Amino acid sequence: MAPTKLRPSSRKDTPAEVSERVAWLLDKIWLGSQVRMAKETGISQGAISNVVRGKRPPGRSFLTAIARHPLVNIDWLLTGDGEPLLPSKGGELMLPIVRQILPGSPANFQNLWSGEYTPATEADFGETRYWFFVPSDDKPLGLHAGDLLLLETDRFWIEKPDMLLGGPCAVAGNDSAPQLQGLRYDPTTKPEGKFAIRLTPEGERRRHRRVQPAGTGGLKKPPAKSNAGTADGDRVPLRSIIAVGMLLQRRWNRPGAVP
Image 1 (cartoon, helix red, strand yellow):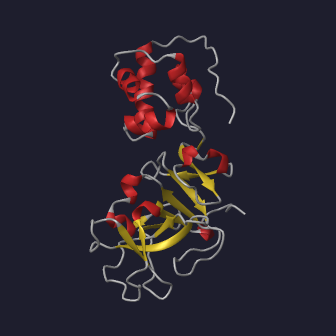
Image 2: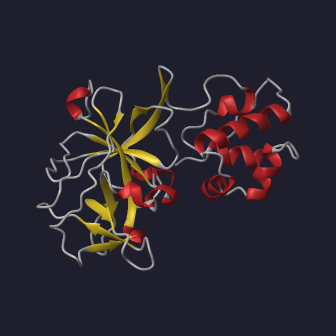
Image 3: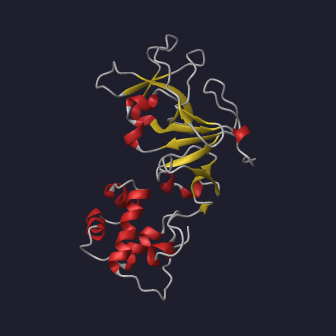
């Protein structure tokens, strides 16, 4: 990725105005987490705190680090001109389409992005999310070739037990590429939350929490009954789960589906 350079501008916004825009990006891209913003930009949390609270104006290196983010509009950051986030289409927020499961947060693996984007609602948009292009049918998981599955990589969501009940999760293999698995949380293990049970193809079919067939999604709760067909020892540690499915877009309801 080429280094980001700040272009000189004839417009002179006050440092307070630029700081307000930094605070807006903090809330929108990093969900208000200074720790996450610091980790992904390389800026210290103390510097971020000083800027958003108006204690210190953002310097050139500070702004350059933020401008490297692929969704940040540099012109808006410096002058307030244009849309805050890029790329945008018709006012919609966009997330990258990726054709392989990423080892972690999409911001850390931009070299693996396909270069394609598709919209996400404000509620579904997030720095730690991306659209996974399903390459082939997966009947046990209810996926079809060409579907787009919204994957969340933030550990906050992955380690919530209820998030493992409704859809496929991406599980890292020891010697193989990450794969989608149907998982059920096992609350009986000690310490609690250490393991999830892998569902066998003969087990209960997983449902996605939200299925978005035509641009809008409704909440679908997973069935509460247990899966008697799962082997007692067929478990994976939570640390091996690198993403959880949040939303599914069906291929036949998306005009101009990705080939």
